[in-house]
Amino acid sequence: MTFPKNFLWGGAVAANQCEGAWNIDGKGISTADCMTAGSVNVRREYTDGIVDGKYYPNHTAIDFYHHYKEDIALFAEMGFKCFRTSIHWTRIFPEGDEVVPNEKGLQFYDVLFDECLKYGIEPVVTISHYETPYGLVKKYGSWRNRKMIDFYLHFCETIFDRYKNKVKHWMTFNEINTIIFHPSVPTGIRVDEGENFDQVVYQAAHHILLASAKAVKLGHSINPDFKIGMMMLGHPYYAETCKPEDQWESKNMADRNYYFSDVQVRGAYSKKALKFLESKHVRLDKVKDDDRILSEGTVDFIGFSYYHSFVASSSNERDFTAGNVLKTIKNPYLKTSDWGWQFDPIGLRIEMNNLYDRYQKPVFIVENGLGAYDSINEKGEIIDDYRIDYLRKHIREMEKAIVQDGVECIGYTPWGCIDLVSMGTGEMDKRYGFIYVDRDNAGKGTLQRIKKKSFYWYKRVIETNGVDLGR
Ligand code: BGP
Image 1 (cartoon, helix red, strand yellow):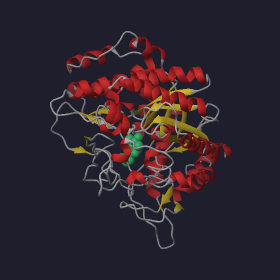
Image 2 (image 1 turned 180 degrees about the vertical axis):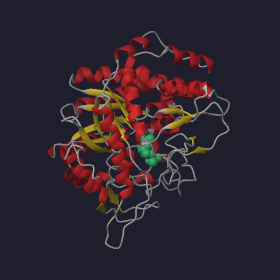
Image 3 (image 1 turned 180 degrees about the horizontal axis):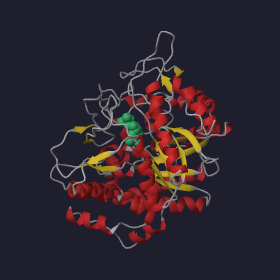
Image 4 (image 1 turned 120 degrees about the horizontal axis):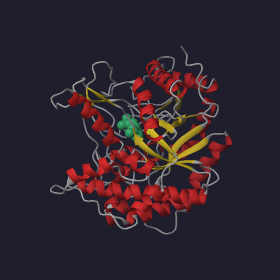
């Protein structure tokens, strides 16, 4: 007994972090194009448009736009069954509010998906992955504005219709639950001083949830075979001790993290979520049909990213360490990466169980991986045993969740299957890939692709459907 026969082994990227070609073939400016480079200690700056003299790593990224054929051939060599990417909204609607789409942008995804299908690789598409057309931010205030629902829906209708015979698995928004922590990254929203932060972000989130629900309904009407999922940052919370106050904190934090998935999977805000909004003095501006719309657009599966677990404590006097989007209290039982993220393979099994128990819907692990410094040795090789070790341990736990716990899981797409620009820091040196890309933090390099040791390891994992994990 091991992984299901049709398990979707693959890899994941996001358009804005790999494509580059930010102003080519009619593409407009997206919020991701306005993110400067940062580092472990320096936060990325989100500038008001493109400012002269600043370096924007996503503008060129790894130039996947011009290298996709070569890159997909490498994915095919590893035996990928699927490839998760996103569609750059601004390639299709440069400003966001156009009626007629940009044909050149549509053509790019046509050839990209055809190239995947040629090798039997199924494209898995995130509709909006951490970017919003900058035109919509400037003209309408982004997701603060209800009008966004229609712009997003028009985008969805265009791509659903165009790619209905090429794409089956879709996800409406990447890591939807993170908008409440860093609204500028997914939406370009800046919350001004003096504004009620919670009121702004939860109202924007309400619009996003409505847009997601409408998109699910629309997608199913365009092609009933579509599987449309939600996507969240998934992680379990461990109570720091068995003190009841710590236990309560971890339960409460976990429920808070399911705020979005509860709506997207069950079709309504939980009572606890409504109480939470009340406690924050948030009054959701809802119109008559909103509740019906949410109930009619429930998702088919739960996509989630998993990088590490969190510790919850009733005390704030604790040591923190960095994490994906959010920092967490240090867990003394776990090791950390060079960027301070803790590794916790068992946490993946726990979160798969948490989600499946809560919703009884299939899960799809659409991101997981280790950001690490890689070096090329004198023979020109990249021996990334640390990455292999990380992934192997996570795959083992995933297998236990499927085989021993009965969790339905559609597939596994490790993050950044080819090196790309880090979302959090804008660095190239924070590498996740099976394929190395010769590009540095300053945007220098030949862009040459080199297979790492993990490339051959993952190929064998897929070939044996997860039986041979190499130890
Ligand atoms: C997730 C995002 C990705 C990705 C990943 C790794 O939260 O969905 O876009 O970048 O995290 O994070 P980072 O790039 O900051 O290492």
